[in-house]
Length: 263
Image (cartoon, rainbow, N blue to C red; front, side, top):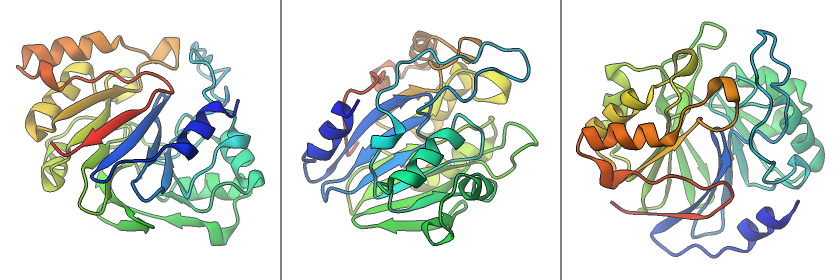
């Protein structure tokens, strides 16, 4: 299952753009013009199944690659939930030696440690902190936690030099401060949850965030992986349409490259 990783490794990214691949749920691979590769929230297992609450959390999306072949200059997790900081994926990544650095907010650090990631390879981050990795920068952004089990949720604003800004919000509930955080950075593209399950943004709230922040491109995620935590992306498209922003809608296809440009 190395085909996708081989494609990512071999892709040449045009100056002034970013290349983006959707892995499912909130999993993304980002590549810069300088060749820097960042993985965000890769969920490459079925470790959420079975659910302790009796939900159907069996994986619905075929693995785009195995965690053993995942390669990146940085692996960043937005928070410690299993479908974002996946212990099984992280264990394989720790053993493979193909990930140079691991980054995440407070509660992910225990997950990193338990996965066997060396202390020298793991870094803590928080909203507004900027992390540099070669020609890419990741700026931490505010997210409103969706439950009391992890209060260190966050997102990332990713940019290569003066190129486009890509905002991966991570799991977040709605609040006005979320939109204010987005307006601080003025992203060109936004990847945001739409499923509405368990306090996440609903498709309507996600569309409202897009309306307020006004990126050129709105990419839905977190709708596909689990039968009991899903939402048709068409509903997000419909909500954008009602708000007069249908032209911003850009549905991702698993494993297919998207090009992010300035707005």
